[in-house]
Image (tube, rainbow, N blue to C red; front, side, top):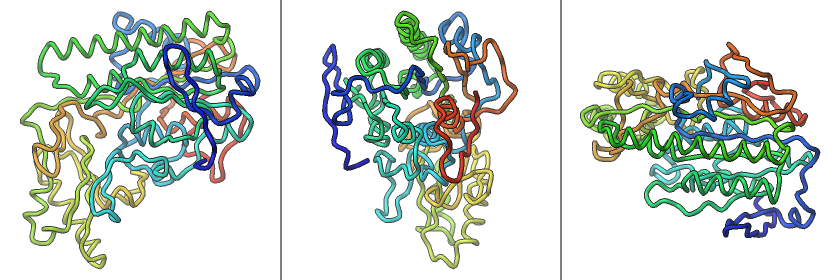
Length: 412
């Protein structure tokens, strides 16, 4: 992947795509008539999809196959859930435990944003190997970085909003429409980031609540533009459209902040020997003392964390249901609904909107499109998860499964 030569294409409106050298010269390069589009409405709550506020998303949900019990994975923030969508495997196999981790080799925390942070194969690469073409249109700079050059075509996101590090949904959808029109990949993976970015704002005032509603309505309009294009070009009848969120959203008040670094450093056994990677709704705690003391330290870390107000529970990372690898540290602590972590000090995380804990697991997840494989007006009792997207896409295109299988399940 890293040695594949790429070239830049400038589409209408100055949009820039990078593409595998030679792919554009051969035309669109798409194989067959099947098309799949994965649209992530980042940070959207299921109860925000209504006929009044988001009529297009509501119509897609009720007109296709809906999973009312769908959820994200525990501890997972933006990057890991996007990776699971495309890899179909859990974090201990993909190598991506959370947005922010403590890197023992660096002796510091860092955000996952490099292509090498994904250590599993993806359905993008699987489709490429089978002669299909793929595209990524990712509004967030770190998502663009972590997926790297895996797709046949990728959008160079812009303009980027300062601080938030994302391109607004209107520009993102402009890029989607241009990519489909000019390059027509078999699979396009899209992240729409506005709902998430407005969701992180302070929700205690009516003006910000109104802004989030406006963001929801505008994102719905962007989805409407996309569906209208599929229908007008005849692509709809050959397509499956997977719509989901990577997580939902919770809000905390200024007095509902949890800082665990102080309590760890105040404990004689743990002082100076615990590093924390803060992920908003979840803290990842790493024992840095002697390996011989790790088991006792884990129990002590859990006991101290569980005694702090606002902590829902602190678990050993090795508990099987968490499905996490060593990158996630030794202990995972979740906050209660209405709270947030801020480490290493109370000023480190000023963002009230929060996710990564059990309160934000429920997500919208539904399949739409005109392809005969897509069920019509059906609600499923199955517990769908973000990890189900890749096997669903693989089944749709008939490209099989990776060695070791999927952790998710095909939902078609």
